[in-house]
Amino acid sequence: MIRSPLSTTVIFHLGPVPISDTVATTWGLMAALTVGAALATRNLKTRPGRLQAALELLVTGVQGQVRETLRADPGPYIAFLGGLFVFVASANLLSLIPGLEPPTAHIETDAALAAIVFCATHWFGVRAKGLGPYLADFARPTWLMLPLNLISEFTRAFSLMVRLFGNIMSGVFIIGVVLSLVGLFAPVPFMALELLTGLIQAYIFTVLAMVFIGGAVSSSRSA
Amino acid sequence: MQIDFWTLGLQAANFLILVWLLHRFLYKPVLAAIAARQAEADRLTADGAQARAAVEAERSQLEAERAALAKSRDEVLAQARSAAEAERKSLLEKAGHDAEALTAEARKALAREQAEAARTVGRRAATLGGAIARKLLDRDLAEAVQDHLVDQLCADLEALPAETRTQIAGRLGEPGAVFEVASAAPLSAARTRRLRERLEQVLGVPAAPVFRVDPGLIAGAEVRFPFTVLRRTWSEDLDRIEAELVRDDA
Image (cartoon, helix red, strand yellow):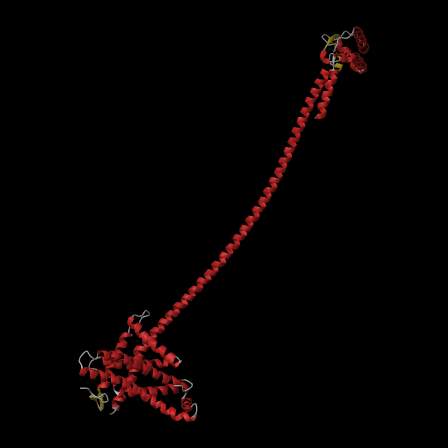
C-alpha cells in the first residue's frame, strides 16, 4: 500500500515532541554523514588518496561554483552552501535504499530548507551591506518595485520548496507505484532516473540558493 | 494536506546542526589539508625559485668567469701573437743580417778568389810573357846588344861605392874566393881584355876572373864576386819585369 507523501508518521515522542520517521531518517543520515566525514578526514595527507581526492574535489568544486556565482570569496558561504548540497543530494539518494524514504520527499523538510535559504539570503545580505542599504535595495530601481520585490522574495523561496518536493516526491511515488504493480526489478530504470534527478535537484537547489545569496550581497538586485 | 510544524522545525534544526557538523568534520579539515598542500606547494615553489635564483646566480658567475677566461685567453693569445710577431721580426732581421753577412763574406771570398785568380793569371801571364820574350829574343838580337850591355856593366862597376869596391877587393885575396864573369855568348878577346882592365881599374887590384858562358842569361853579362853579383843581362831584366808584374797584380 502506498502511503500519502503529504502525510508524516510519528514513530515516537520525545517528551511533548513527536518524532516522525522523516526526522529519524534525517538523524540517521546526519549520523552517517558526520561519522563518514570524521573517518574520511581523520588522516588527511599532503599526498591525497582516492577518498581524500574525492573529498577535495567535492570541496573545491563547491568553492569554485560559489566563487563563480557570487563573484566573492567563498569562505563565508562554503559551509552553508556545501552543507546544503551534501544534505539535499544524500537525502535524495536515500530513495535508492529499499525501505527508506528520502526526507526531501516530505514537504516539511523542503519547507525547512527553503525557509533556511530565505533567512540565510537576508542574513548574508544584511551582513554584506548593512541593514539600511540592504532594505533600500528592495525599492530599487523605483519605489514601485518594492511590492514586487517583497513578493518575489517569498515566491522564489516557495518555488524552491515546491520544486524540490515535487521532483523527489514524484520520483519516490513512481518507484512505489511501479514496484507494487510490476515486480522487484522493474523499478530499476526508474531508480537510475531518480539517482540522476536527485543529484540534479540538489545541484539546482544549491545553485539557486547561491544565486539568491549572490543577489543579496551584490550591489544591485539582479536575482 | 497538513504540515507537521514539529517536523519542519526539527528538520530546520537538523539541517543547521548538520551544517555545523559538516563544517567541523568535513570542510574545515579538507580546506586545512588543501591550504597545507598549497602552503607546501608555495614553499616548494619558493624553494624552487630560490634554487633557480641560486642556479641563475651561479650561472651568471660562471658566465662571468667564462667571459673573464675568454678575455684572458684573448689577452694571452694577443701577447703570444705579439711575442711571436716580435720573434718572427727578430728572426727575420737576424736572418737578414746573417744573409747580408754571408753575402758580404761570400762577396769578399769571391773578391779574394777573383783577386787570387787574377794574381795567378797575372803570374802565369808574366811567366808566359817572360817565356815568350825569351823565345822571341833570338841570338842575333842578343849579339847586337851584347856589347852595349857589357859597357853598361862596366859603368855599373864604376858606379859602385868606394867602400864596396874596397871590401870586394879585400875579399878577392881570400883563398877560394869566387870571381867569375859569365856572359850569354863568348866575349871577344878585345872585350875580355877591356873588361879585365876596367875591373882592375875599379877594384885597384890585379883581376883574373874566370870567364864562363851561360846561355840562360840571353844577352849581357854578370860579374860574380865573393859576396855579391853585379848583373847586366836580359835574363835578369826579364826576371825583374816579371817580378814587378807579379807585384803589381798583388
